Structure formats: C-alpha cells, structure tokens
Length: 342
Image (cartoon, rainbow, N blue to C red; front, side, top):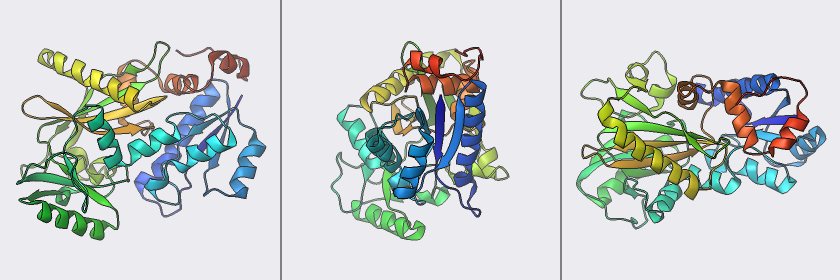
C-alpha cells in the first residue's frame, strides 16, 4: 500500500516554524515504513497540471496530509484537502470543510458559540461583536489565520477602554504584522492543551497538559512565538509543559476532556486534534481554539501527550491511517510482515 506524505514546500531561508513540517514528514515516513507501508513525500504546490499529474502518477492508496499553508499563506490551508477531494483521493486528518472552519479563528469561535461551547469574546474591526464586549478590559490581538503563534509576542496583549480604541489597536497590529488580526478577551488563569486521537472505540482524549508559566511578573502569561520556536529565549524556558496534577484537579480535567470531545464532534474532526483552553480564576474553562491536524513532530505537545498515554509514535500514525482507511484494506496493503502496533 502506497501512502503519499503531502506537505507544503519549505524554502531554504525558511524560519523554524516553517521548517518543522519537514521534521514531521520525515518522522511520519519512518513510522509508515516501520508499519509496512510504502511512503513517498510530495510537496504541495498551488493547484496546476504539474501537481495533478505527479500525484496521479503516484497512484496513492491514501495521502497523509501535513500541508500547513499554501504559497506561504495560512488562509489557503484548506486548498490541499479540497484538491484531494476533487481528485477522489483518500487523505488523513480533517476534511477540507473542517480545516477551513478551524483555521479561521473567528469562524471557529462563531461555531463554538453556536454550539454553546464557551470561548472568549472577540472583535473584528468593522464587524458587530456576536456577544457584548466587556470594556474596559484586557485583550490579546491574534492573527486571524496563522498558526504556530505567528505574530504573537508580549505586545500582543493590550488594554482598551472602548470599542473604538480596541479596533484601532487591532488595525495598528495588523498593519505592523502585515496580517489580518482580531482581538480576543484575555483570560487570566491556567492554560491547558487537550489532545484527541482516533482509536478503535472512537476518539480518545489523551492525558491533559498544562503550560506552567515561569515568566517575570511584568510579562504576560502567553505562549508566544518565541515560547514555541526559540529554545534560547526566556519565553521558551518559561513555558513548561506538565502532565502532573493534584487530586483536586480531577473534576476539572474530566470537564476539559468532555469539552474537547464535544469540539471533535461539532467540528466533525478525524484522525487527531488538539483543543487549547484557558481556565479563569473562577474555574470556568474557555476554549481558545480547536487545532485540526496539529503538529506531530517528535517534540510536539500532541506527541508528548500520546507518549504519556503509552502510545508510541508509529501507533499514532497507524491510528490516524485507520481513521481514514477501512482496517481490512490496511492489512491487505501492508508490504511487510511487521506486527501491528495498537
């Protein structure tokens, strides 16, 4: 059985967040080979005859979709699965519709609000807020489409006393970054990541992770770009992932897991996902965003959660494949007698 690993092209001068997809592609390829599949990597170019000809010539039984952007633009992330749908090819992870719905952060928040999943209030300049904005208050300005904390730093957190002031701050930040941005109410409190992986009995919530902030008092407790990608920075060293919780947190963790599964169901996700939360000082959980097809490089939070659950990397990949292809086709299509990892 042949599986094409599809990823976005990475230029030679790419930053760490862009180069990470190559790490993922290499690890997925290694895992697929260990499971007895034939793996072939292919960069995804803007739709055209060349790409269509190449992938049709490969005749894949399945495509492992790792595309994170198209032509360097996160707003086109749904194009790859859309083209695969057009070509009639099976692919891993979220559908084109789910990718679009979760990648546009405001659209995702609107969907959560309509599904009665608590998410912090937000503002897009020029648009009437769906829910009333608490003002004055503290807000965090985020890129509307980009993942990997692109554009986030300590200056992203602002205080506004009116809607007009907040709109102006968002517009100034958008101009500075060259990215479309929106404002989200800043939730002071604890931050959690809940990963979900497809399994034989349905989606499984992996052990919860909390980001323990160890930053100077004058710094805002956020996971910004440096915290994710600059290992020598104070931000990276001051955002520590932990899977250890006191007994008193049992009820909270169960609630977060239940909400994560609701997100999986309402967004109709497949394969794997991660839901990011803030929990305020009253103990109320707020979903910041739903990440379809999250990063699965070896040092990612998703893989760390799977490891905590006792699931090795090849088994992660096998579960994702199993959520795409019927089991009997997978077993018939193996090219080696490797023992199945479950």
